[in-house]
Length: 121
Image 1 (tube, rainbow, N blue to C red):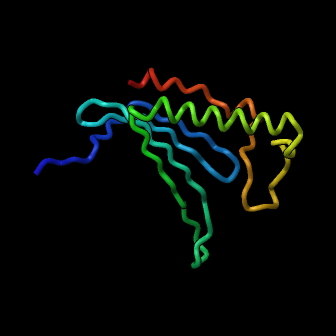
Image 2 (image 1 turned 90 degrees about the vertical axis):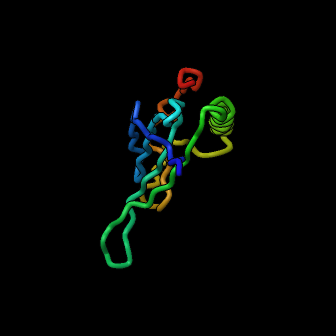
């Protein structure tokens, strides 16, 4: 029986701390030498027993989706910037430290990453 799990040879890894969350961007290869990207969000949370654990959410992004994903992300970030610039929402630097959900602590220009997905294919 053929193993259909990706080979997962790690090519590149980048972690980004953002408030209470850490994001991991990992470029890996499959056995067929195709590139793919995993994006993992990790957040430290208290358990019922009082010990902390890390809640993780992972997205697998494959080469055939790089361009559409990048375009959608760019469009969403541009809309956020437009709404902020129009004064429709508070400044992204608002202190949310007393709330559970905190936005990324970097400035709006710092979190916009120009990812060239064509370089991966």
